[in-house]
Length: 199
Image (cartoon, rainbow, N blue to C red; front, side, top):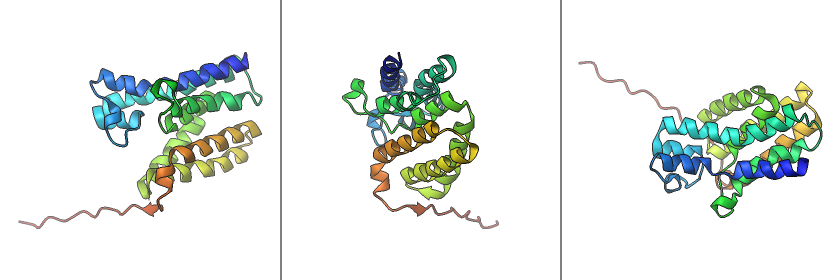
């Protein structure tokens, strides 16, 4: 049963929902930005409304199969590792897109929704928002946010399975963000407000 669920989790992650949502909006999102078939390019191509739809869809690709495995089937052992990683692998290496895909950040967060509901996703999103405001490129912001959360899992007493899930996800994130990580990280300059002369 678990092996079948791993395959189903992979296929769920492989569904190019952001690409399909972009088509509903009349756009080919792969023609925008970095060509990534993920929610960020839905934002670039079609605006905030469609972006939130795509983001929720990408979250759900991992949250649903992982959440069912965890809360309904109550699998608590090492089977959770491949089940939680499979949607991200499907998103990154999608057979529906010629074995290419996105950067797997949304499916990573979706898997943690399935595992912890909102605890880890809220921590990750808050940290990523703050770090991304200060540090670039984006890949470095993602990495600098994710790595300390390994320590948080240990501090909170999460099992070794959860730590292993995050470590393997970080390895995949490094792979999908190699272009960013090949550049040196930098602090983003703050924009100073230019005072307009008084009339």
